[in-house]
Amino acid sequence: MSAYPDAERKPRMGFFTDTTVCIGCKACEVACKEWNLVPEDGYDWLGQSYDNSGELSANTWRHVAFIEQDKPLKLDAGDFAAADAEPEPLRWLMESDVCKHCTHAGCLDVCPTGSLFRTEFGTVVVQEDICNGCGYCVPACPFGVLDKRHLPRRPDDAPLSLPLLGKKEDGRVWKCTLCYDRLKGGHEPACAKACPTDSIQFGELDELRERAEQRLAKLEAENWNGPRLYGHDAEDGVGGFGAFFLLLDEPEVYGLPPDPVVPTRHLPRLWKSTALAAAALTLGLVAAFAGGAE
Image 1 (cartoon, rainbow, N blue to C red):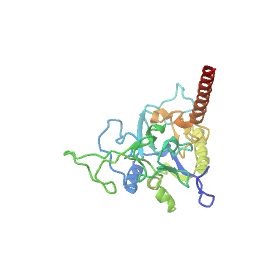
Image 2: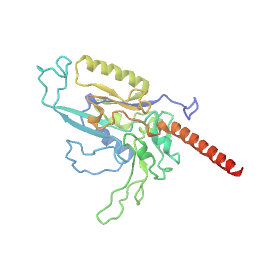
Image 3: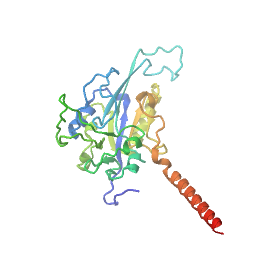
Image 4: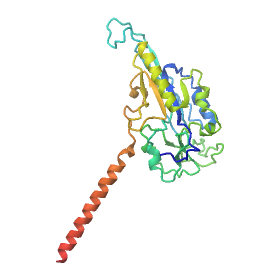
């Protein structure tokens, strides 16, 4: 149920990321940092292909993964095991990862302060002025998206000052907001605006799902190697993603969980079992005392 009355409720907005046209330019990473004033998170060379950011974090709200594979981009006859097929020596799998803005978001379930909330656009946002840094939401996310921000320090161990963040270490949770401020102004998120190939597509979620199905059918008809949708199914363990993907291999290849489940999904059943056990224990104690009084 939406927290907003019908007059304020908007169509659910989200991302469809078509990784087949991603060129790894990192324009989305840069645009995200520039618009949202996200601090730099180091320029260390990770030695993992051309990936220098590594993973999503409090200081990386968009992460472009690079995967090199000795697999063909397309299949001669749609047969993965075709002995006479000459595979291309290399294909690049590139994917711009982001917060999934889950339909059933574990982070929302465990936040004790109301810092995390669902917007009128169906997205999940952190209010940093309310966040107390408890970190409960960090393990509640099955994708490892949420992270507490710890600002870098200078060699003399003096805290690094950053705009709007003060001089002390932060410790609060930060993540993608799907550019909530831009959405309220009628604009698309900065990453989608900056993407030169339309790999990151923004719009109404139902419309994006239809578009993704059409794109998948086209790739399958053209015998692409391994196309599949990830996160579009509303019956999955998080109720479907608000930011879903078209991949060319198993989700694990991209560092994504194959069957994500929100950790709080089983809470109602667990609480019911706990209540029944407590009731049985209470009845047992009452019966024991009653029997001892005779």
